[in-house]
Image 1 (spheres, rainbow, N blue to C red):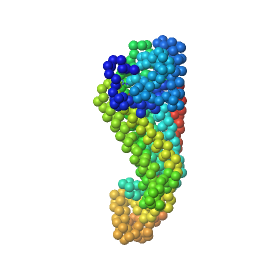
Image 2: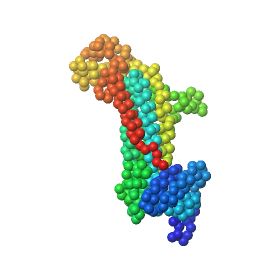
Image 3: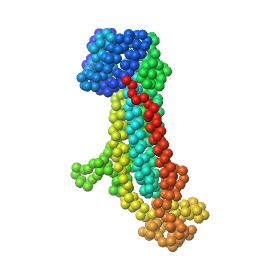
Length: 468
Ligand code: ARG
């Protein structure tokens, strides 16, 4: 389509090297939607007749049908999805087909196609993230009355409600949803009509194109329109943090379900066995979640490095944005499909969790806090309790074995009331600060969490179903 100024045929290796069909053939449907809006805009500008408009729209529908049914195979010599579609359209319509590319460049075309494609993808991902949030909330609600050890430095720290633990992940994922929302809003502007870089000499109504494609508005600057890929970076920002959070959750569940920790049990249907060791139940799904995340973080870097120092406006480097994008989307869908049903079946290992409380040392802060209530300055209380632990470790005893007399000999301010209240459940119950692990606070978080889900639902219902 652009060969007339050349005196030699393009080398075969160049065709192979420059083609983008392996990444953009998936964009055919979005590309045709963009072309149909362009046809309508051309007609409204009086650049094609009503009959030509009709022929082009029907022709484009036919090409889409042929692509969907697999009848139309793309040709490498036609470089990309755009030229394959145009070539087939011209085969069907002759000279009318040759009018499609009036007032358009592949530069504004791919920018429009990508935004349309990504918008649809992000809406699908957003609804999967909603399901994801619901699965975490479900576990939080189911497990809120279970007391488990909480960790810092991967050492037992203080008892917590398991509902509190799940909600800690919920808030991270809720923040991710806000990032996804921002990415969706940022991409919702229409570059069509910017042509190669400078706009068009024809009187195109860019507001009409934007409206037809259900974009919020046309982009403000034609150079920026074809050079901008920020919206992919915005999406990667969401995807990166979301997957970092998924990998932290996956890692926790791998550790907590190990024989050594034994706090939770993973569903059999989401674990795999060993080909040699019959006793094994391996958390491969969670390991793969952890393992796949790096590729997405790398893709974010890949895009930023491509954009860094890239002269305006369009350069062919930009074609490579799609390779990583397709991979990231595939990884994200994979993880979003497998994690929620797995999460919904995670159960607490009650016996395993209670082992963490057997020596009572996890209640050390609680003893110190009680002493503060009896008038002991906190630093002194901390020293006294630490000293009592040292004594226990030397004597081979633990906090739950000690008699009131033994406690008193170690800590003169210790009394019966402290002894009676020294258990993991009351430790949880008493941490009532806003956002603390007390059951009442977990309940409050749960109702806030439900409100977030309602907001997510409302946000999703505001987006247009689809563009024809
Ligand atoms: N296949 C190209 C891409 O994906 C389309 C734009 C090509 N534009 C150009 N001036 N060569 O970016």
